[in-house]
Length: 277
Ligand code: GUN
Image (tube, rainbow, N blue to C red; front, side, top):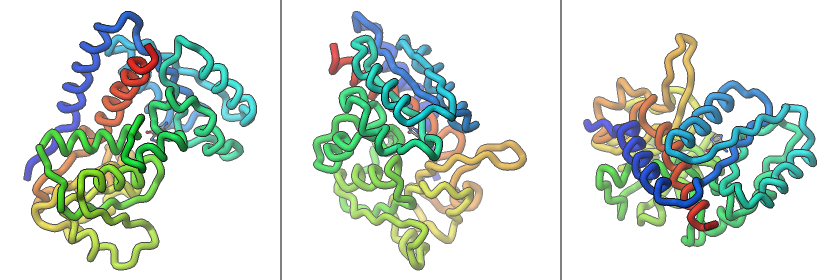
């Protein structure tokens, strides 16, 4: 079994972005919008903000109250769309229940949509003409590239069908000529399907869902999950102890996909700034 070291690969990507930023006349500027105080979102947005500053980008963390109306949030987004100094806009999800995430995503200037969640960018990705690709699945492809994994003709199984991870992940694997299956909470006899997977991506949001009996020996197992357990430790959707005994490659949690999401956000923000200058 080989461990895929996301922390190391993310650091290499971050270093490359740092060098590219130094060559620009104006630093890329990302605005990270946090609505409310969801505890995981507070940590994620803080990390995104801090990492941007570390690579020499300008970053603004805009904290808005959970009680903000949808119209007021839309008006903030319209202002950010107009600001020439702002290259990237990221609205941290989930949003409070009274706000429609669809309407908010639709309002972001698609050329500043570094998350790749605007319908125009979703459409472009699925047409095979990607502009901004969602950070987590794009980061997973970077991990596969780091081990020179050839997806062509392989069976790839994605567990989870979210717009943020599952769906774009399946599309990216398809574009690399894998045979792709998406499993979800209503899938029947899921382990029969997951056991066919040469590449298994777990993005279900359930701690330790994937145990050794779900996995084909030698498979490449990518764990997108991140959960804080009652003892304070972080863990993923994969039962690392049992699965690592039979997988060919595996990503750890922490230190696997998580750092890649932020490294990819930096790459997308650099791309937004380069496109705007
Ligand atoms: N919430 C969970 N993952 C993400 C992400 O990649 N981007 C945003 N904006 N919110 C998230």
